[in-house]
Amino acid sequence: MNQRNIVLAITGASGSAYAIRLAQVLLGAGHHIHLIVSSAARQVAAQELDLKIPADDAPIDEWLHFTKTALTTETAAEWGFAEWSTDVTGTFSVHGVGDYSAGIASGSFLTGGMIICPCSMGTLSSIACGSSTNLVQRSADVHLKERRPLVLVPRETPLSLIALENMTRLSHAGATILPAMPGFYHRPDCVADLVDFVVARICDHLDVEHSLVRRWSEVE
Ligand SMILES: Cc1cc2nc3c(=O)[nH]c(=O)nc-3n(C[C@H](O)[C@H](O)[C@H](O)COP(=O)(O)O)c2cc1C
Image (tube, rainbow, N blue to C red; front, side, top):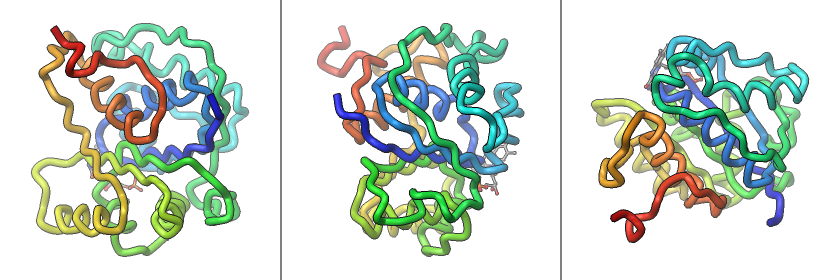
């Protein structure tokens, strides 16, 4: 399959496991990930999974090792994640959240789309008003203006009117609002199954091959 540039931004909403699983699937499917991690995302990952996310300028091998092993913490094992053994054919670039000189800050840099997973209400709101105050927001703005796929995976509950209106505005502007809202009809056995359900829907929206969950017609 053709390798595509896919921007993956991880922001500080609950659900670090979604992002890590998604990165694993993108790498397994052979894509080039342009990763941006907000500082709040680092705090959330430490809180939820005892994870220390590498520094933005860490060697790519360290990022690769992190992505492969991040779901082997004690918590992740309790959630039912197994060791990740898929061959990696994809590649990585990591961009600092304040680095506006990154290619992905410009519309002339071609990508196959962008995913913000999980997406905080703060980032959602900044994109909805076009403020572009960091690379996540700027790159999202570029995807909207260039009419390229932008998938936002918000997580918050309940949702304020402000958040709902921001989502409506972004949907009108061309983004896909894909909340971290797993279904249960595939009879999940564990947390990992719920995470895979959401990641599968994200991959479907960007035509990324996966075999994470059985599709509805395949469920007995
Ligand atoms: C443990 C933890 C969990 C959080 N969960 C959420 C959440 O589910 N949704 C959300 O919108 N913000 C959540 N926040 C707050 C955001 O991290 C905060 O608003 C931050 O400013 C978002 O910044 P960012 O969008 O640049 O990552 C959480 C923060 C922490 C520390």
